[in-house]
Image 1 (cartoon, one colour):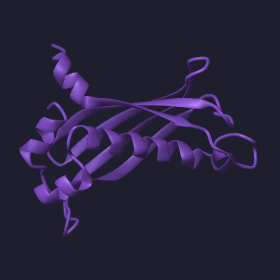
Image 2: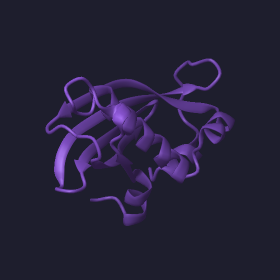
Image 3: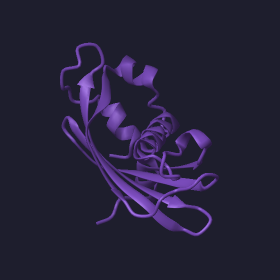
Image 4: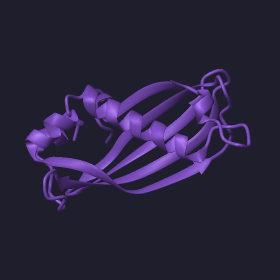
Length: 142
């Protein structure tokens, strides 16, 4: 059974970014770490959109920290490209959550990269693993 459309909308977010000169490495294309920064920007924008800003998460006593990133690169992005970063929070169970990303060049719909990030919920003060407040999970459609 698939998730209701409202839940899926709460779990997904799309962000567009423009490749800037500072994103380019010595090989003339976007540096690998820039893709990861775009993924993190999309995750933060998604969280903000559903009302789970950093101050709100801290107020609720739990924040997410990255445990692992796995990125597969396909085609390089180049200076001036517009890139669409689509993210979906695909699972949330206990103290763990998983987010997937696709990065696509807008001009020709070429898949540039895919990323999967495993997140762990931790206490915002102690940094120790902690189950997130139910309001957090509900905001993301779970």
